[in-house]
Length: 286
Ligand SMILES: Nc1ncnc2c1ncn2[C@@H]1O[C@H](COP(=O)(O)OP(=O)(O)OP(=O)(O)O)[C@@H](O)[C@H]1O
Ligand SMILES: [Mg+2]
Image (cartoon, rainbow, N blue to C red):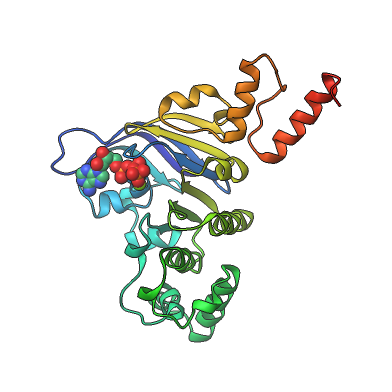
């Protein structure tokens, strides 16, 4: 089922003379995990802002084409309803902090309070999310006294606690170390396993290769490639659109170029080991 249907979407920011997004066509399916990739300035954040209705509800500009969220035109959605349907985690975690709450616990509870839920239910939901993201130790801290990585986790928690059907997450790991980054991907996978639809902007190809179902590759405001992760990230052609490939795929491609065909291009460490083992057997090397 298509959660988000986009047809011939173009967009021009106010004042700017040229379009920033050009004729985008895409269908986002329920329960799938999409990674949006592409170089700086490709239009990834702008694209996310269209999906979550920030464009056109806040940013005016000139929006053309059709954007349907669960079949209903985005212009006809109330922004309040839309923000319950689509949780958005900002590229900059500092932007997400409300500034009106004194502890992390209250910060995460803030959105639920606004929905007018009972205190007991709010407490239970916040406690569950604190546990899931392993940030219980932060609950009494002031949100402004957190490190960048801690802020990113609290920002993610404050969205997950709202249980939106669609999660749009813009570079959630920029402030995190490798371990923290892997943990965030595991949390996102958990969300996917709960049936959520995920749209994640990320640059870390090895992790995208491991976790994402599908890729949306953007360049200069266009979607230049879209499809299954295994197809897009194993294709040398992807490199010409300003995107990187996982190092395992580069290894596989280089082997093939050296006339050592592994049979398929691996994307992950596990796949690399397996194709190399098979190749060595075939070559009589093992
Ligand atoms: N509010 C704005 N008004 C006018 N132009 C903007 C605005 N925000 C972004 N742009 C321009 O739109 C283009 C796309 O920017 P966007 O932030 O969507 O790219 P991005 O792919 O998210 O980049 P990054 O990887 O650096 O986050 C850039 O050329 C940027 O300068
Ligand atoms: Mg961006």
